[in-house]
Image: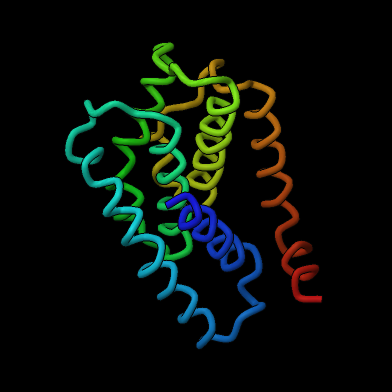
Length: 167
């Protein structure tokens, strides 16, 4: 599933940041692949956690959520993103409660996933802003500042980046 997550993020980023690279036919083919080969299998894997948020969590769950949220963004599927917000917020709450018992490298991976999801949802689905738990100081404040600044820069200069991707 880790490969599925990473490929979902990569394909979604290509569609989100360089949509003009692809013909309409190619875009539809990529979107179908994201839905069938990423969103559906990841959602299937996450079902037990969605049904029972009290199941033990770890960095694997937040990693898979990253793939699912990127797929939702590429598919412009607000309903899919909304469906998993409660699980995202529950995981966030768990990490804020000092429950996280894995080594620092695993925590860093989870932290990176949290921040990518925050940035992505703010950008693609701004209407969800009030429903998303804000990151705490347990999520590295330097990483949070970095992603916020990077996100603001990308949004302000989006057309320049889109043009670079086309050349």
